[in-house]
Amino acid sequence: MPILNRAAELQREVTEWRRQLHTNPEILYDVDETAAFVVEKLREFGVDEIVTGIGRTGVVGVIRGQGAGRAIGLRADMDALPIQETGNKAWASKTPGKMHACGHDGHTAMLLGAAKHLAETRNFRGAVVVIFQPAEEGGAGAFAMVQDGLMERFGIEEVYGMHNMPGMPVGTFAIRKGGIMAAPDKFTITVKGRGGHAAEPHHTIDPIAIGAQIVGNLQLIASRNANPLRSVVVSVTRFHAGTTHNIIPEEAMLGGTVRSLDEAVRDLAENRIREVAKGVAAAHGADVTVEYERACPVTVNHPEETMHAARAAIDVAGPQNVDTEVDPSMAGEDFAFMLQARPGAYILIGNGNTAGLHHPAYDFNDEVIAYGVSYWVRLAEQRLTE
Image 1 (cartoon, rainbow, N blue to C red):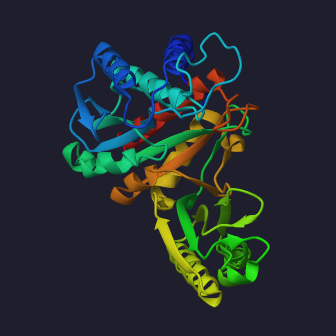
Image 2 (cartoon, helix red, strand yellow):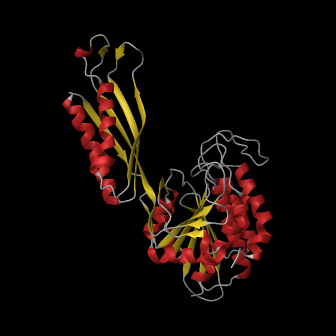
Image 3 (cartoon, rainbow, N blue to C red):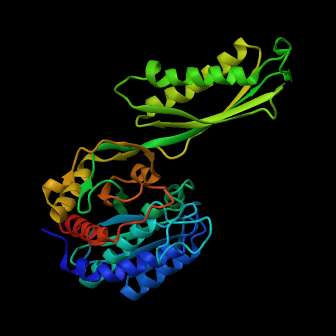
């Protein structure tokens, strides 16, 4: 079955919502205007229950169907990024240094479109819980909502998420069982040596030279410590030391990120970073501190729910346009916290040939809207009529 006629009819209206949201981006938990916009629309649709303040600034709407039944959750993220937008679109960001560079404006608008249709038709039993989450971009908003009792309060038994993907054609979907997005951790290593004149390095303990050795040895974690069949990325992305050309500094700081798709490999990487840093520093008489911060866990799709999500996508786009064994991404996604709390699945929807995510020239492709709305409606109706 193709996209819903009603979704096609809603295309222009949902596009207007999306562009309004794009014009007024908000960061992390400071999404008050966005949340107010969502609440206003849910009220217009006649959604049965609207709750604000879940996970600080999250919004939840409950749409009840024709008769009793279970509840499923559909989640969209609302927050933007601290990036200066480029280009001259009529709907470009009006807030300097902030933009919707990841398509959360599109995610929110598509879920609102689905909520409008579901509230009109109610062609299901039980309840559809539409979840509008703040602070996906580094603020663990999903965790905050779960901690606030999201699943228990609304009786959610399954939960589903969707994200656009540049480079995938419009009208296509991609999903996989198991890990689909990585755990994105970060680390900071501070090497404390003994500074001095660059002409007399033998009187110093050079933290730059020691830090450089640490960088080189960290590359062995992926190539020589981890099982080659279990992906891990260790990237050093910062190295700061020194003030001028003829002074060896007292201290050097380096940092970066670790991406993994397996919790055992995640543990291995953290342990090896600590061991390598301490071992290299000790060999040269320096002191070292290692700060390792775990962000969201691996985003793990549950097998049965992945099949349900794929079936809904196939109904919308056809089997030839749904990849059910897509390669996992080493990017992170805090929807992982919701998938730890309840079974569910996370699917990718094609955004066409656009700039990449988190790029200053990125823009959500409005041609995607009818496909996204149709997917949400199909999924909800299928899961709540069986």
